[in-house]
Length: 457
Image 1 (tube, rainbow, N blue to C red):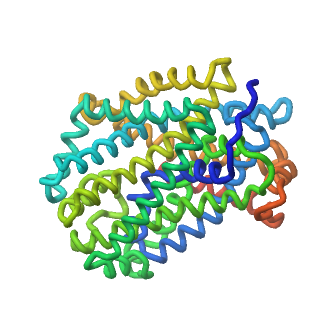
Image 2: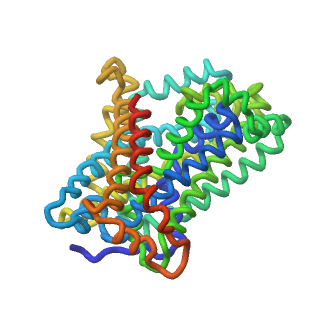
Image 3: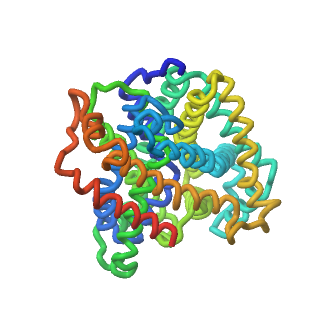
């Protein structure tokens, strides 16, 4: 086994882990869910589920990573007892990371294209959802354009990873995350100066039991639970890998709280950008909380940017921010993939990076083609992109999270004693409370099963 690399600083660990959790769904999905399902009421329910569901699952994944000093490819092999089969989790984790990248790289390429469209002003003449829907359709229908943008995302992020953990992944991601937060704060400040900002903030942040009742309490709780779970990308080892790169100076619950707080702050601030703009230039929010998708970025929001003074600059900055959000996830997952190979083969980091550039470029083709030359091809009634997204989000993430929790809490796995010792190892940070053991052992697995069932249904 090669000597284990280490992150250079705690800040690097926090920003890398937060970058993995912060994704495109934070920006477009959370604000619309919050606005449509009761404003502050939804936000409070969401935060409650982050505490009840997200924090313990993330802490479990971090503990397995740090204790084993391995990726999901060999972490369970390292910690399980003789005769146990937890190491089979490696197949789910490896498959999950590759499947995620097969469609996430394509969507990241879209962000690059739209940022360029705003930089050169070519999109500014389109107004209204219908016209911008045509622009989006023309883009995804252009095979070579989407293929080139997808390949650019893959190459850029793998080249960053090839430079090494500290010199590439940590150094560049830190600057990228700082730039992400600076851009976001700047866009928030701008959005709050718009004419109808107060109406947008009222819709977003003032509790509305009327909107909650219209949607149905069960729907609101289900949406909050699902968003709280899936936003953190727990279950396929993409968080554990960064736990494996840190020392034992700090307790892990405090680190998980910091990561979750950064992830949540991005989600909350996104609404501060979107809703004032919607109520100033769109007469309110037209997206349906029950079915909002990534198209909201390319139609409704782009229509708003094209209607406002200085929209070319605002649109370019917004999609640059989206690129940083997407690339932070790509780099984190690519690092996990590289770690698989480094642990399972004698190859160098650079060689592994170049192999995976070619591998993921090929694996992403079905997703790229699913919106143009293979648009008529479906599997179980879904396009390749939708199918890949469904398998990762609705199956692999909850199954993986359930496995981490059971592994850490039952005598048939690593066991509570070992987990507690690891998670509380260190002189600084929040201690993991002993009273939470019955909840994590019995209630939390049932909640994850409920998420799994609801997500499939």
